[in-house]
Length: 82
Figure 1 (cartoon, rainbow, N blue to C red):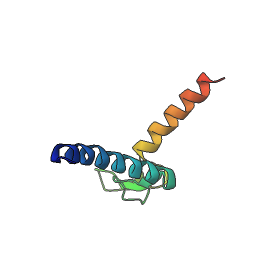
Figure 2: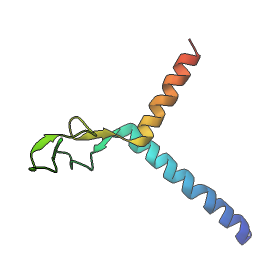
Figure 3: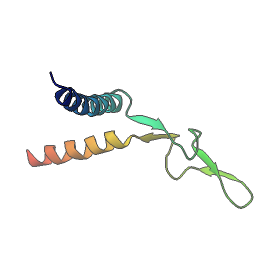
């Protein structure tokens, strides 16, 4: 095999493995910790630093972007087959 073929195989294999790994992660663990509230579910207000519920999440966990995309595609496909 020439070096150009090896490079082409490597350049196609690595992104495919990363994509499959992220897809598996979204399937196994669809939620991740909210970065704004650090998983506590509460943030503090700017004025007087009072605690309040986090606007981005309800319970400290957010749906991963990949899982959100999967849900939209799955819903569209299900509606198309009705």
